[in-house]
Length: 261
Ligand SMILES: NC(=O)c1ccc[n+]([C@@H]2O[C@H](COP(=O)([O-])OP(=O)(O)OC[C@H]3O[C@@H](n4cnc5c(N)ncnc54)[C@H](OP(=O)(O)O)[C@@H]3O)[C@@H](O)[C@H]2O)c1
Image (tube, rainbow, N blue to C red):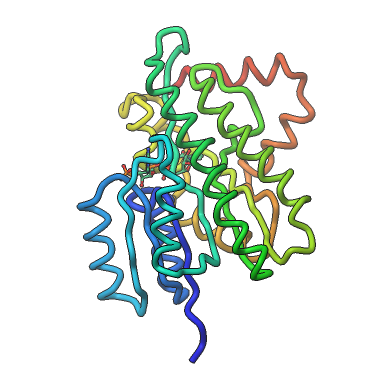
């Protein structure tokens, strides 16, 4: 009988993460789901196990908390599971001027978007390297390529994710382990509400991508061991445009777009 493969997905209860969950279940992976909402994790487990040939474990955890990544890793190791795929997807933003922001929320964002992602990568990659196989997908953002006035800390966290992923891709050469940064543009998920943007804002006039398509694209690129994956034709052009424009112009344009939110 073929060996079952396990994938661990953070931020599995909604948006892009939930789409990843369905893709991996369809592909026959067993799953470890991580997010805060335990009720929703349980109901996703029940649904997936009745629809697909998959075993689902879940860990309810706030990844902003100190030691969260270590707790998740310990729980997985206690079950003697080798995690073949790690999807670091959990993350959130906060809209508004930094000077008026809630410092606690900014710190939690850095903890979740940067610290937990870094620690999970470090902890799970050791076994992957030993086994000579494994894949890590870090969800960054199109914001990784630019500064983000009105979402300054969020954009900076995503710049970290991209830089970190690119550097690891070089270090991991020849190990059998790959790492991919998925960099979506605006996507139709709960992200915007969590970031305190006005639902009735002009942002709705911008064409938001579907989370299903974004996750599908990320899955494909991760399987092909692409280092940077930017879904969507127009979003895909943005990194090049940003390289060609003078930096002050980039800052001005991003600020104008942000003010539409
Ligand atoms: N939507 C966009 O436009 C967009 C664009 C570029 C990049 N991204 C990135 O895509 C990723 C997924 O976001 P999304 O758009 O799918 O947003 P979403 O619909 O708000 O989903 C976020 C997921 O992360 C989990 N989560 C949030 N804070 C957490 C915490 N402290 N600890 C553990 N889990 C937490 C949430 O579950 P619980 O509430 O149950 O914890 C949820 O499952 C994020 O990294 C985001 O930065 C989004």
